Image: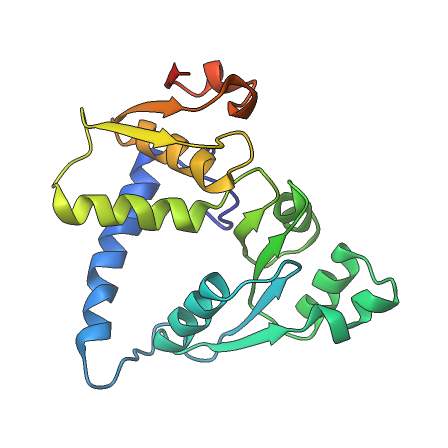
Length: 203
């Protein structure tokens, strides 16, 4: 798997592999020196078109812990302010030797567009109302800390499901892990394609 664009298209085996790696790397943060050379020499850019504190900082901390150089591109002062397109920005970064792009964008599908035009990994840090796969993975990993398996567990997600990219990622991920997911909210806040996502709906 070259890119991480959403959990809808990630199979269970890959999700479990990510969790196996996460358990090993979690130990790093308990050391006096919180760094390993896994990504030494790699340059990673966080390309955030939306404001963010926790998500951007989390990626920066993770990149540095794995030995990579993390570069936060300031959209307001970049060539984007002069009309440079998203694809042009990504291609320029690739030419400069960047090894991976982590993108957050207000438009659904922006990470998928990048993945079609660059040859380096693209990680989706949240795109519009579509998905936020890394947050979904973190939520599931946290649940697995309390329970060895999510198979057969009932998980209820309450609120504005239609406009929550995290909810969508949780739904795709949890159902693949064997959990029984119920979404609760007013009908106008439930996605129209909810019947295709394998969950129960309670209004």
